[in-house]
Image 1: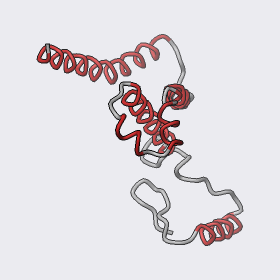
Image 2 (image 1 turned 60 degrees about the horizontal axis):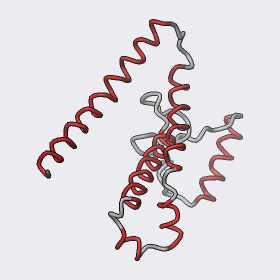
Image 3 (image 1 turned 45 degrees about the vertical axis):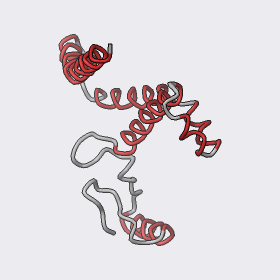
Length: 149
């Protein structure tokens, strides 16, 4: 079976053929085979599927804001009703994003000894990673607002 650079199987066979191949492999090895997309990738502790779902949830929220801000009213006229309903409930994407993020954070610290020093480093790392883009985007919005008014 061929795999892509992330270690996920590439669909070169039908699902039935893949299922039979996995059953045969399990019988030879005497153990279950984990699905690469749900397990951490080999390159690190990234969950490819969970990260993908977080991205979808974030995009759902973006579409929700565009819909609620009436930035896509003409597009909504052409979309199927169920798609508009999904977009209109995009506030649920926030809850999904935070639940998945909580899982990722809990998994990342599960093998660590959590003490005051660890918490300080953890908060500093997250602050550097999140605060810099946040303040940059705030500055960018401010510059746009100054030019508009």
